[in-house]
Image 1 (cartoon, one colour):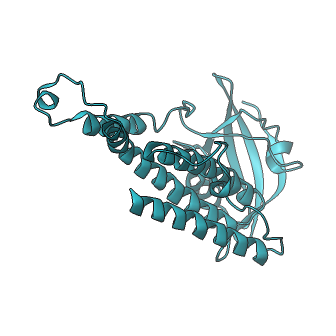
Image 2 (cartoon, one colour):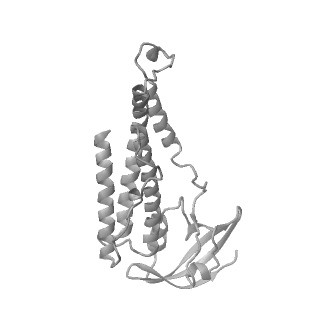
Image 3 (cartoon, helix red, strand yellow):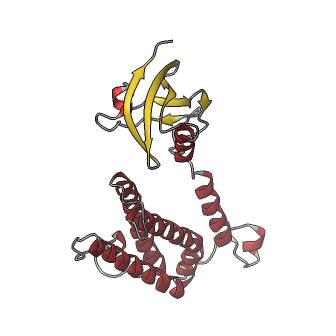
Length: 252
């Protein structure tokens, strides 16, 4: 456990330094806490047991992961996602590393809890054959249970979808806004090519793939459960980026 704690501390320090360097490169102040992992624990005093120490790291790493999830989308919204050392890539890397650290803690928790109980003189009372022989299997069973539950619930909260890209609030005066797309609409096809799931690749490939510098892309939207109203977007492509110039809603 000591080696894990040292790795966690080095991880948090490295992330803090990387964030401060990024802030300086953007001309911002690099003072103060740069990561949720630096936040002080609301506990009074130091953790007394290894389990309590793991709990503190687990909570702080989850807080940091949430913060980096927010930072990642903020960076993309501000187009700080291109070029070496951009904030989107930095936050994605740190999010991945904190999530990995949380999983390391999940894997350690049962063993550490059993160690704490044994040190406190609390013997195993399980009546399974192995524990009855004095070879406790409560810890590996707990580790496997935690691992399985995290895997089974990985997609919890994901909205069910039948394919397509859900529209978030469109940018003001954009082609989507002028075409009447609203938050909650689902773009289900582009030029009669269905979109199987909500990924950036499907959208960009469909819009850019077969269009000239000035062309139209026919976009079908779904509003509610049954409506599939076609909308025509007129697009102008320039230097690889979409430039929206006009839009014409159509009737079926």
